[in-house]
Amino acid sequence: MDSGENIQLMGTWNFTRRESALHSEVEALRWAMENMLQHSTCQSFVTDCKEPIAMIKKPQAWPTFATELERIETLQICFPDFNIIYVPQARNQISDFLAKTARFFYRELLFIG
Image (cartoon, rainbow, N blue to C red; front, side, top):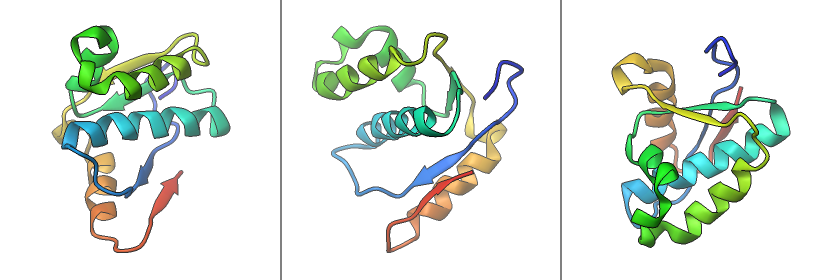
């Protein structure tokens, strides 16, 4: 999203399943951050999951995710005005549709647009 909270880019990737749904959420955030470095000057990220926001605020409270959170902390350095906000699925229908569609592909699917 840009500073006016307008969607600039959306993406989806149906990567292989992780240990838990929360691991997948954190991996998706890392992937989005890495891609925004290549495609946009975007500083704001949106998620429909509250836990990654809590993890970023207090990483020491999530020792199981220490490696993943270190990678996200390193990426945050590249985003001086980094912001992540929660938007429920009901208010984020396009990205929810992208995620559900990607789940049903048997081959790798990668989309940024």
